Length: 337
Image (cartoon, rainbow, N blue to C red; front, side):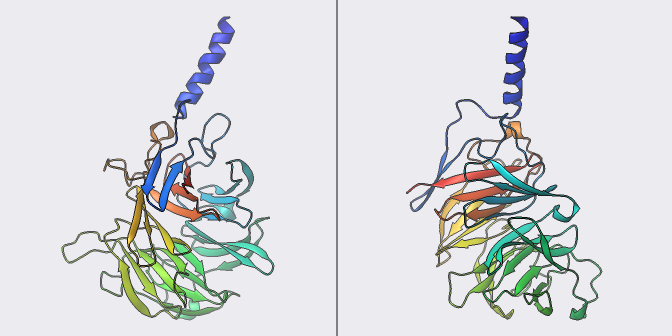
């Protein structure tokens, strides 16, 4: 009897420590076409504990609907029901700050920006085999003392764009073999400058497609942070500022006419093709807990984000959102039809 009580107490404490209540219910968020329900406990292990460890990365979804997310220790691949089906761990897979996935003739490949390692990489989504690495492009003539890529995306013809968002704020363009082609952008708070070109994606809402850049720390004339989204052509020509005042936009990903933009303050913006805000998801009203890495799992609140950093759509229009978080948080949001 005593042993049974002890086992029961241990199980209860484990469950409670994970912060996952047995009666936790989905939380509805958003509005109109962009209404979503959370999936409590999605991606956690059998004890209700995150398997990821610290997260400061991105999310992509493959053709089969499997979800890849990057953590400090490597890349984890989940099935749509939240079970881990493979991992890519080790020194070559750590600290992938941003990821994009590309369906190519030889299969599906993930492209990643590794800021601490100072490189961009390309690897097979099914096996993890690394097939390309991008180092500091000496051909640029810039003589960079530091290189810390934060974002990566792939053009329609396979050209690769890699943003040096934690260092020079230049965006580098390579061909599909890794040959340096050009760079554009410069550090600053001017109209055509970047103050942390933190995120980037191919914006396929337009023809021809454009590069969408998340200028995370842009300051206005009053020294207020006015995080912006900017459009550039595939040849690095400035087009326009398409949104401003988005807090600290960290990344972007497009599906159809919509773009999902995580904001480090603890919310996710969804904009339409006219770049009008359609919904704000997971808003954290506590300024001490929005933009905070140190929210332990026991303090997570269902439906409230803390350091929103990466996101991805699946084919059904569901969203997967990663928080910048000490315990490793990946959230599934099911689109309400």
